[in-house]
Amino acid sequence: MPPRPYSLVNRLVVGLGLLSVVLSAVAAVALDALFRRNALEARYDVLDAQVIALIATADLDPSGNLAPATLAEARLATPGSGLYAEIRASDGSVTWRSPSTTGSGLALEARPAVGLRQTERVSLSDGTRVLAQSLGVSWETGDGPARTFFLSAAESLEPYYEEVARVRLWLAAGAGLLMLALVTALSLGLRWGLQPLRRLEREIAEVEQGGRELLGAGWPRELSGVTTNLNALLAGERTRLARYRTTLGNLAHSLKTPIAALKAIASSADPGTRSQVEPPLERMQSIVEYQLRRAVLAGAGSTVAAVSVAGPLQDLLGALRKVYRDKSVACELEVPPTLAYPMETGDLLELAGNLLDNAFKYCRARVVLRARSRERADWRRPGLEIEVLDDGPGIPASDRQRVLERGVRVDESVDGQGIGLASARDVAAAYGGSVEVDGGPLGGARVRVLLPGR
Image (tube, rainbow, N blue to C red; front, side, top):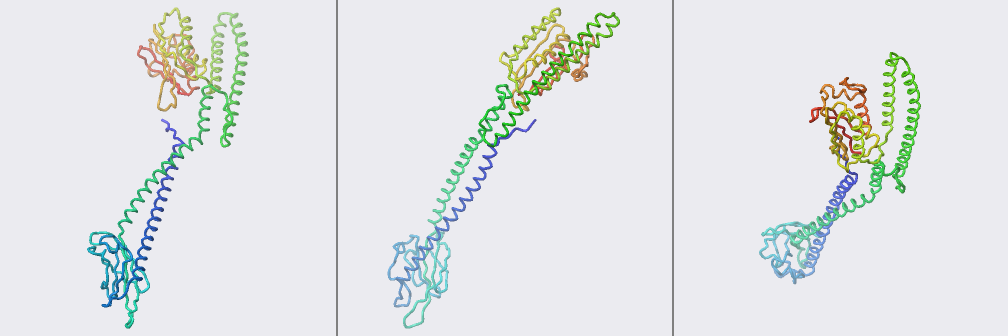
């Protein structure tokens, strides 16, 4: 069974769709990192501003502890507000804490050098994540040595993480919509761009079915060379076929006269000479006719129109009934009236005629001819099945393949030359089909022809 043909459009859409998925994912990751960096920098700026505000409002109290005189931010006065501040001495003791740290369990450990900033992430007693920034300062005491203090501001990171989660959700939704839009646009764009290929496929099918002789015009630059060459090939094939058949017709006409003359000479000879000459002449004539039929079939193209099957077969049966009227054969024709197949009428008659002639010769009283549409997994289109059955003696299993060869006869008691089944096999082979011989339900032979969809 041949592999199922794949679609270029589907392959391109899948490939470009996967590429868009990768690029969208990379873009989403990059945007997420950029947002997180900018959001953290904004929080660093807020904390730095709070530390500067502490420096601006801080002063030593009578006990020598550094504390702000006023709170620059109202949230520092509200417990649980998410913004915290504290001042620690160089020994780590806390000299001041904002009211917002009440019950929070905030514990900062950063001890930056004077003039430097240090950030740290800590967790409160309830698990809240906090970002803190500390600045080391040297504070003049007036009459004593300068003292070192650490001024710190901290802010809850929970709003930051919630915002990051929202942004990531929007990024994922946006990336998904973007990928869907890209794949849809790619699919529509490719289908639009590949329309000339579909048109080419359609016109080639029309040529095969006999609906047109050549491909149309107006092709894009990428296909113009292909279509031009195909048209040249089709035109050349038709010209060659016409010339070939004309030559064969002339040859047949030329051979008829000498053979007829030899037959006339043989008929006027004495009986002994006539009995010796006439059989070779008859065989010569049959060989010429057979080889001419094979040559015509070898030159047959595939660009033929579909012909009705029922009409020619009905006519064929009528002619055979007249030829074998003395035998009183009951012949049944089982063919759908709408059945059609793309082949030349002469080839159909040649094929079915050889099979039916054999069936009429060897049957006892009954012949059945069936024709129907047939589908197979290895055929792209429905084909044609022709079946001929008779109630004669049949063909032995050992001879069923051999009788398809030219000149082979199983029953010598019936007149014939053994080329009927071989001719039918050649006609079927010219259309890519085959002939099978086996036993039939009527008791005699069953010959079945399978022609693929064209």
